[in-house]
Image 1 (spheres, rainbow, N blue to C red):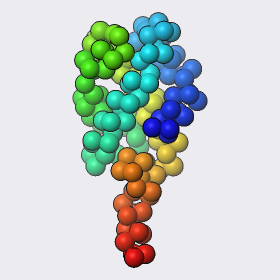
Image 2 (image 1 turned 90 degrees about the vertical axis):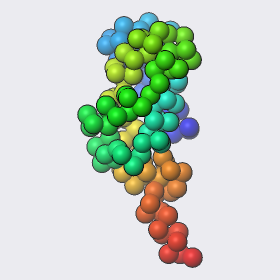
Image 3 (image 1 turned 180 degrees about the horizontal axis):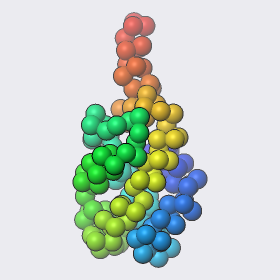
Image 4 (image 1 turned 60 degrees about the vertical axis):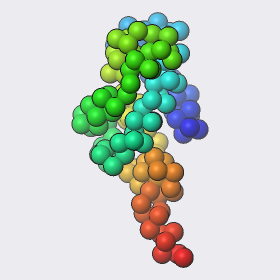
Length: 132
């Protein structure tokens, strides 16, 4: 999760602006929501990695699939918000967060490696097998 924590730290102002401007969050609500939402997004990405367009992570199909894969009710209870606020927060920040994740991951191969825990994703697995 160091990867995610780095993004949330580096891009906190941008993400907070999305939450306060588009979802109507207070600054305190946004601060509580961002780490919980980030974790929920990463969990959804891991569970749906094989169905995502990793070349264009912020593509509308990815945003929709991930939005549907996040339990906004559970996220709301963790962040101290209503389910409606939680859903609005995800809708506001997800495209921007996916763009940041895609840019920092180093492309599809790096992203797949991050999601599967294998350096280089499938390419790294194949390279490891060929080296044995």
